[in-house]
Image (cartoon, rainbow, N blue to C red):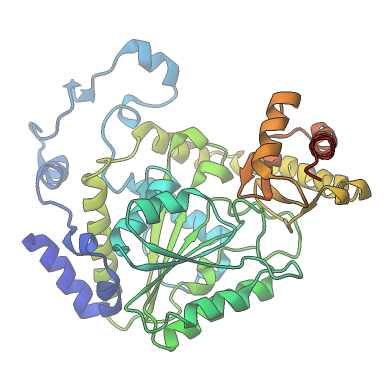
Amino acid sequence: MDPLAIELNETLRAHAPMVYDALSALGRELFFPRGILTQTAEAKKSAYRYNATIGIATLKGKPLYLRSLRKYIKYLKPEETFPYAPTTGLVDLRHIWREHQLKLNPGLAEKSFSLPIVTNGLTHGLSIYADMFCDAGDILLLPDKMWGNYRMIFGTRRGADIRMYPFFTPEGGLDALSFRAALLSNKDRRKVLVLLNFPNNPTGYSPYPEEASAMAEALVDAAEAGANIVACVDDAYTGLFYDEGVYRESLFSLIADAHPRLTAIKVDGPTKEDYVWGFRLGFITFSLAMQGDRDAVYNALERKTGGLIRGTISKSSTPSQSLLIHAMRSAGYEEEKGEKFLLLKERYAELKSVLEEPVYAEAFRPYPFNAGYFMCLELLHTDAERLRRHLLDAYGVGIIAIGERDIRIAFSCLEREQIKDLFDILYTAVKDLDIHDRRSGRL
């Protein structure tokens, strides 16, 4: 093991032993090298005559660039566009995003949490969580309504033993009791990994205050019972809450700084909330409740994360980071976000109204939804994949089939006036298949 990794591990072992115990084998090996990047950072501060450290090309102290590229990004300075960003992201952006987190989540004001680290999108942030904490055979608790890519990130890549619990109760609320039972049934394991995602993909459901509190209390109670828990909150759709009664913050606000055996991680970013899907920017943030030197622990985790980033993607896009800095500092930023939010909320309201049509109950029923980009339907007697193909072939309509009976609809990309038509087509398509099945003797 590299001496730098040993040094970071000793810091964690001394000040946050539960975090050290939860690290994967790879997580313990990680460190940020004192090589080219460190020497370049030092030279950037002190090399006043010549700086011949990093592999970029310059002219008169400015980065070289092609005019054919420059003309398309003329509002950014060359130095905001063409050079490498630091491995953990532009420092200004990291501080701006922390302020953004506090604004969206007032409950974090009195909590301890690290400076966010820039990732190459939220999927990259989730893969960092997986690489740092998940070994083959480690248990990961997930709801039975989840984003399918979690299986690839944690199951295929890291060999996690994925255990499912029901997302909804039979009555249609969040099943916090099943979540609690799943946690406590594994309290004797060396560690338990948990991944929470609200607003949920694929259902578009976000918890109400009592449900959010029950989920957080279950995590704290399991930690108190002896479980060493590493809980990550995937906040891809944070802030997109349409029902006024929904809990308005990330669950990270409730589990951050909550128990010494509960390591809380927040993965978030501008992808969905700022409508910059192609920017590929995200953030990963850590929070620990501990008596030791938190700054030393956060620094150790940052250096391990930096080493992981350095060894995979090297760093994230400089122009994407610079553009986000300028946008978030712009006078009209919040107003523009509010306009887009109201647009999505109007589509949500229209969808709720359309689903009151009684005839649809013959073919499908909606799962509860109140936030985000999506909603799900349970098909009462139709195969989801068969319906998906029929919709494409006969009507030119695309939806996502999930399992045998569920389909996901992204109302975020439907105009308000298209929603009723889409659901009429869905209903008609189900009836088409019913008629076919009767004629062929299936029904």
